[in-house]
Image (cartoon, one colour):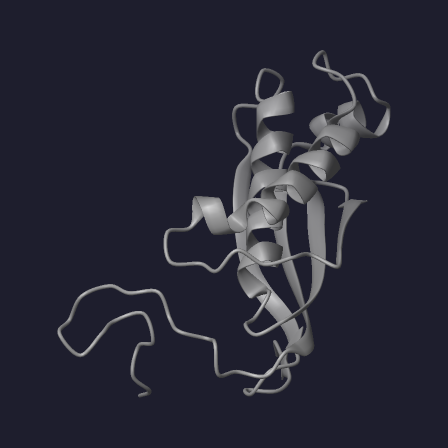
Length: 156
């Protein structure tokens, strides 16, 4: 097992020093789902949720969250985002969320993509929770990353 980079020799949490790393183009994709009753998906599809346009709110929340990741996760480096996209796919009993983040920086962009998915999912939940108490957020994960020293990763 490799050594945890956020733990110093003394065992204390620390921010990783990335100053010697090369600046490269880095991209990450994360996915997640909000599982719900088919009737709730219909509410979203038909733009009938009492709180308004669920998909628009979730997309904006995901973008805003990605931009603030360095403020939300204690040891995360604040990164300049070159791009962030949030795709929301309506399924029969769920909304799938796909976030793709891109930067040119010294460290990875995975946390921004994961944070975007997480907040988009929470926003969907908040927007329709009155209509469906059975919803659940699940399967938030990194699905792909490129760039940097560790190279490419693609989830099986």
